[in-house]
Amino acid sequence: MQNSYVALDLETTGLRPKYDRILEIGAVRVEDGAVIDTYESFVDNGMPVPEPVTELTGITQEMIAGGPGLREAVEGFLAFAGEDVLLGHNLLFDYSFMKRSVINLGGDFERSGLDTLAISRACLPKVQGKALNKLAAYFGIAQERHHRALDDAITASRIYERLKEEFGEEKPALFEAVPLRFNIKKERPLTNSQKVYLRDLLKYHRIESNVKIDELTMSEASRMIDAILLRYGRITR
Image (cartoon, rainbow, N blue to C red; front, side, top):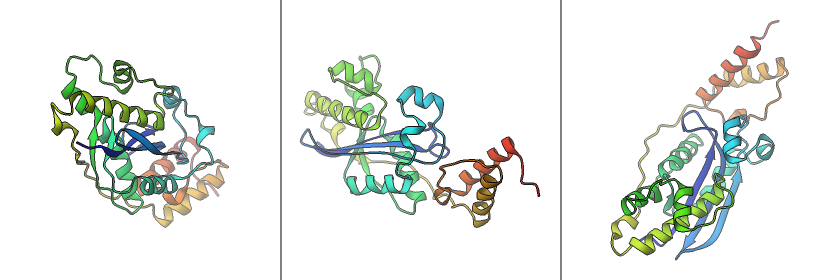
């Protein structure tokens, strides 16, 4: 059974790793059931925080403004996690966002992991509701800030430890890490012409933006340019 791992949770602008972005990273290093270290970072990706996300998480634009950019936050997580086994609730969601971000930044990210959602489905078929907060309530695990990355990572680790305690000897295979599968190709970075045109658009229309233009992919830059043109129009001389 896996007794040491890094529990990971992300808060994002949406549910699609190809189009949405990471807002917050939370991770905890666990050894023999005890949290021995933590990592927590907002991500100022220059994109507005959608109102439904603020309503769900409590994360506002002001909270992320001026914080680490994607590269700094992701590299901080990679340094924290190393090559360790990952753990999470519906882990493939968080893994897909992290892997896409790492690959677009020029790295690689192949890991093994444990999914507390999958384990709970196998061990607790009669329990209604397998969402993180529902399982926390089932096990009597207190949660102060549900839908905040670090707190949810800690909660996932505690749920895992309770599941392992109750079902580890009966179903040991469920508590062994397996390779995580999410296929993705690196997206092309924005072109120099896109970079120049986007900066010209922002300047011409006097748009204040914290977008880190150099970190955008070609498709992200195209979507941002299209949105500006639709709302403000083209540059006229």
